[in-house]
Length: 402
Ligand SMILES: *Cc1c(COP(=O)(O)O)cnc(C)c1O
Image 1 (cartoon, protein in one colour):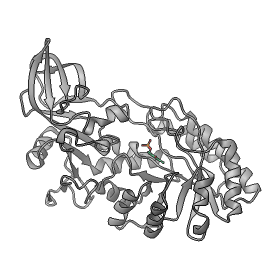
Image 2 (image 1 turned 180 degrees about the horizontal axis):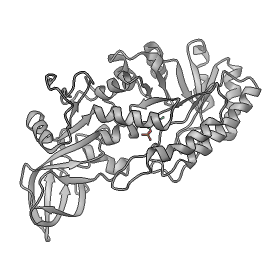
Image 3 (image 1 turned 135 degrees about the horizontal axis):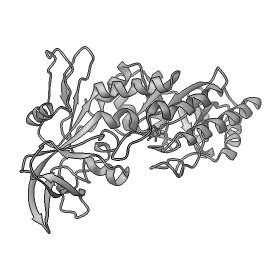
Image 4 (image 1 turned 60 degrees about the vertical axis):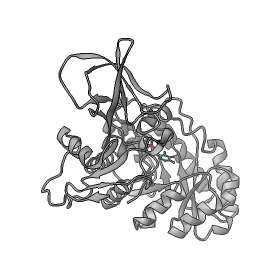
């Protein structure tokens, strides 16, 4: 199920009300509309904020072919973490030299699949994982992931992964004993970071560790991976990206010249690049509030409100009229499935559309089909600069498909 609008001369703004209505007429509801032009814009903004840092898009927040293609066409790189993500990159004929594999814990078959694709750089954070590469030392090299706890981040990724900074040298020594090349260090301070203080601390600590490891000749040690965590606006605004990155840039400028710096942005690239579109299925008046039941909810694209602790700005496409107390609920029979309460909304009719903003990251990716309500159809728009306005949808069941 795909169609092309390649004869349209200009980019279309898929977030414009008339375009949203047109896409719903064509592809149904619920939708996740991904604007590849906004993906490009986010990538460029982060590049300007972090010049000379190679940006490896982390697929996890939105593992979708149109996003991956857009990143690659823009000269970006990929951060793959699972066999499924490797297969998506492989299907799209991405150059494996542009990819790294960053899951600190891998099955032998995950490593094999990634190596078979052609990925050469992997991440390890403990002795068992380092030993998995003993026989692969001629094909694979490692980044050692170090943990810097970040209680300020909404999602602290340093609790689950990463070795203590005090153990990093010992881990590098083990790799050196096994003749596995340590290319450098990596960290992820946590997603949607409140400020860049943790990044700066981690960069400085890693610089000291890499210098110590170099003195012991424990590997090539020419790469520093500063992870993701770059924040975006939700209901709560985030720091401007240039301002957020300025201290990071200053810290990176103090690194030795030959260190290649890479980052693994996920949320920042796709979060603002997509909106969720849901339809009112029915309504009821309960205790002085209008309850509107939508065809997408907490078990679908709004799953990020649970897993990712995000609050998306939601609003009806319909405007005007008297505003009444309202609740937006998801479609399932579970009482937890409520998107937003205490809203003041115009009176909505079945079929009215509800728009969720900043819904590209950790939304559709973590949606389920609980109660047999299908996941939103992903529609990508403005896929190619020379193919403006092209529209593609992913049929049901083809998660991350072409
Ligand atoms: C999830 C993840 C990312 C992306 O993080 P964001 O905060 O979304 O930028 C990057 N690297 C790794 C290893 C991850 O697990």
